[in-house]
Every structure is written in structure tokens, then in C-alpha cells.
Image 1 (spheres, rainbow, N blue to C red):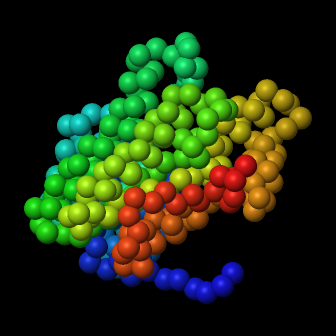
Image 2: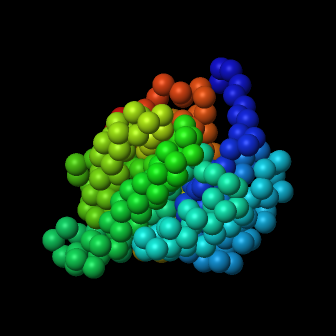
Length: 268
């Protein structure tokens, strides 16, 4: 590799949704290591408290946990309000929380399946961004918002109908909301992931391995990594590095961009 990069987020306060495992935890960990104040979020209070306690040991900033089910606008309000109460202001929001519908067929999925996917994967990103943006405007803060999307949102085939549709919507949300917010000094961008080590990816690998007794989940994950041009699975830190860049002064002229953190998977 060429060059070295370090980030200093002292004095900044970052809210990372869906951050007790996988990609979200990796992003929260990176902010904590860069000395930011961090709000960890997930639905389960025990997971939130445990994660916050561990990450709080990493940097000079404070890390707190706020449990909230992002399918409900009321709990998003509580997440934002408690974050402001704790740190005085929010300068960074990372919309990472997502669900993966069991039923992915666009023909047989119910409206309940559709709503469950859209409420968390799209509506929550929009509403959380709206709430935090209003806060930034009231405090005259030039903050940063990053949405986490997926290569699935770019692809026109390959299943994952409801999830893929929700991520296509996140791409559109990023472009359109970024244009409006940029005029107020708030930068919105997105990172797009491919096969990245996470609880969901490992679950899918385990399901495939269970159907074929001669293979293990590790075999499946290794195969998926080998298929990417860079020849490996993505790691949460890969995505976190892109998020830290997009929220930093090094990206002060980057707006409405989807950074594809995919090991070249976006080229396939």
C-alpha cells in the first residue's frame, strides 16, 4: 500500500445505527479509536450496553449505548434526543441498521414483508437523517451523514428482491437529499458494500453449508472472497475506513457520492 492515514475525531459526536455487530460495530469502533464520542445502537439493550462498554475503553471520547428499534419513528426520535442530551450535539450520523427479509420473491412477498424491509432500510435512514439534519441546522453545524447501501442496490438481476429494492431506494435518497443538504453545509454520502464479514453473511454461508454436508461455512466464505477481483472478503474495517474518510475534512468537497467498498465486486 502507498501512504498512511490517521483520523482525529476529538470533539465530534457520531451516532452509528445498527452497531453492535459486523459492519456497524466496525464503524463505531473506528470512530471510538479516533477519539470521537460515539452512540452505539441496536434493538437489544444488553447487546448495546455490552458493546458500548467495550468500545468506551478504546479512545479519549465517550461511548454510550441507546437501544432503539428503527422500524418506529418514535424510537428514532428517542435515539436522536438521547444522543443530543449525552453529548450536546451530533456532528456525524451513520445510517447502517438494516434487515434482510426472509421472503425475497417480488411475486410472493406480502405487503407486510415489503413494509418491514422498507421501514428499516429506507424510511429509518430518511427519518434519522431528517431529524439529525434539522438539529445540525438549528446549531449551525456543518456535519456529515453517511448511508450504508449495497451492491445489490445496483444490480438488475440476481434475486434479493425486497432487500435490493430497498438499497436502490437508499441510493436515490442519498443523491436527492445530499443535493438539498449541501446547500446548508451538510454533506451526505454513502458507502456501498459487497461480501463483507458480518453476522448476516456468516448466517447465509451456514445455510448453504448445511445443505451440503461436505462444505463448511468457512469454505463458503472463502469461496465468496476468492470470487472478488481482490481475492478476499471485505472486513468491517474496510467499510469503516471509507466512512471515516467521508466524514473528515479530507472529503470536504465530496457530496452525494456512493463509495463502493467491494474489492472490485462492483465491476462483476
